Structure formats: C-alpha cells, structure tokens
Image 1 (tube, helix red, strand yellow):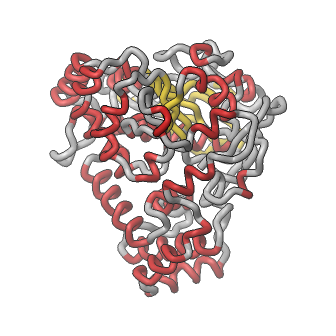
Image 2 (spheres, rainbow, N blue to C red):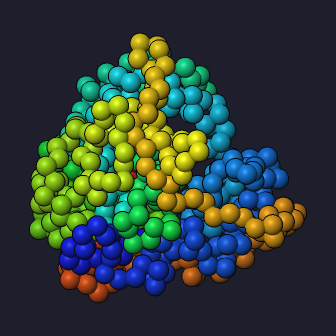
Length: 449
C-alpha cells in the first residue's frame, strides 16, 4: 500500500520518488479517482446493493460518501457481498450505540483522558499528506486501563445510549476514531501540498513505540486490547496505511503468537517492526525529517501527550478564529460556511453536561466529491437487480490488478530505492528470529484515533 521515497520533498510539496499510480496495489490505486474497471463496477454494484437494503441513499448529498464505501470494498478484497455484510454490521453497531451522539456530546475531560492514552496526532503528515500518529504503549499499564474502564462503566460521559454488548468502558475510545475519520482525514484532504490532491485522504500512518514494555504488561493488556482491536477492525476498516513498531523487545515474537489472530492478512501486512538501525532511514523514506519527532531521529520537537503541532505549511491556508492558533482537544468536525467556498472546523462535546459549540478555524474548500452524471445515477439505480453473487465472483476472479493480498502488498514494498530499510520490511524473519519478527501486528487502536 505504500511507495518508496527518497530525499527531502521540495518546499511546500509532498511528493514521492516513484509514481504510486504505476505500482499495482500502491496508493492511490483503489482510492476514489484511481479505480480500475473492475473496481468501478464493484463500487456501482455495492451502492446498488446498499440502496436495495436501505443502507445507503444516493442523495444529493449521499448518506455515505464514495471514499467511505471504498474502505469497505478494499477491506473485503472488492467482494461486494462481504463488504455489504461488514457495512451492515457497522451501521447496526453505530445505531445501537449512538456513535454520532457519543461524538457530539462526549464530556471534554472524558475525551481528553482517552486522547492521552491512545495514538495521538502529531499535527504533521507523511510524504503523501496522510496524517502521522504516535503511540507510546508503556502509558497503558494494567492499573491505568482498569481505572479507565471503571470510570467509563460507572459514569455518564455522553448522551448516547449503548447496546449492552459493547463494553461501556471502551466506548469513549471510539470518539477518537470518529475524530480521525470526521476531522483529521477531511482536513488533510483539503490540503493541496501533496502528490495526489485529487484523492481524499482516508488512512493514517502510525509510529508505535513499545520500548520499556515488559511481557507482563503485554499480558495484562491482552483482554482490553483484544476487545478494542476487534471492534476497530470490524467498524473502522482500511483507516491505516502503515504502522511502524519501534523498540520491540526480543520476546515480542511470543506476543505475536496470540495477537495475530485479531487481524486479517491485509491489516497484518501493513504492520512492521523496525530494528534500531532501521528506524531513522525507514521513517525518513516515508516522512520528511521535519515532521518526524526528535525522539525517532527527526526534527520535530514533539513529545507524547501534547496536542498536535501546527505545520508551517498551513500558514495562509488555515484562518484561526477566537484566538486559536492550533487545534484543541475534543470532538471536531467540518461544516460548510454559508455563502462561501470554505469549511469551518467546529468543536463540539460537553462541559459539566452543557453542550459546547465553537468555531476553531476555517479553510478553503479545495476538494469536493465528484458530481455524478445522470447516466451514472441511472446506471446505479438500474443495477440494483443485478446479482451481487455474480459480481463477487467476477471481482474475485479479476482481482489480480488490485493487488490486495498479503503477498502482493509485501511485493509492493520491495521496490528499488535508496533506503535499504524499506526492502527489509518485506523480508522473512528466518534470518533474524533472535531479534523480532519482521511483520508483527499490534492492536487496531493504533490504526486510528
């Protein structure tokens, strides 16, 4: 899912050294505006199936945008029936737990407590303009998690109801996923200093630091991480591009044995463990040095726990309001500015039960969903009677061009380039068993939020 990069990108420009569009299975292949014929057909059939089940309305505006629907198709290897099943399960889960209400009414202190424990946005992006997150797992000890879950179960932190099945202590975590998909990714989509400004951003890049974490701590976190990971994998598919694990101890291969069952092969193929000598060259291949935290060999003065540091590239683009000069903690989303081609970032949530609403900033609308033509609309509506089973067979048989299996994703990372560490991402761990496995999954909570 990634391309290889070399050198520093020109000022004000995020660009890779090789054309991602020329590599099968590499961003932006399979994303809006870069679909092959089979993928286009899958999207059309998926919409028809969703509309038939009353799970999607074409609008305008549509109930769900194309980039969201494509996440489910990519996650399910373009098999429409499988994507339909996952989408249906997610919609039912969201409705049963009032996820939208949760995000809009969560107490700001409850949100901040979650934000400080889980992956945090640095305020920066990788070379393709995808948001960069950092996660230090050692902050999650068993006592902290027990207290976090207890507070979540015994307090009313939003106006949302629950289904009685999802652990209430975990629900606050999903406000962070909503922040990724409803604030951060749309924000990065509107920034044009990236290689493919025509493609909406729907993923994240993550640095996960597990240094200082012992085997006992991993074991004590097992139940919490398993529940969080499985829910996130099920309901927020295809929201990560790469996770780089740093500081893995020698026993991490033992942890991999019981963690790998929580993920599908596509997710596993995106998660890599870096040896100490690989950290700096690998991160620089994917991220400009100025956007890499100093702790990992970069130039960004960022420490885990602080809010994201505004990028100088935003100067002249983001117009801050009410004295703000950076994004605050809390649920944020974007709304149209009436009468202007601009979007407003609005902070929601609640303080002591009183709902909050304030405008943080505005920025120009530079990207909008492509308008559907009349012919396309008719084609979607008329295709509702087409068998999705036939579509699934066609897509599965013709999926060689989509390159979405674990093997082909690994092949995509083995392109020629100056960063030798990139090649090692896809190597077998046979020659390095005594260190750490080359491909090791971690909780899906690191993929977002």
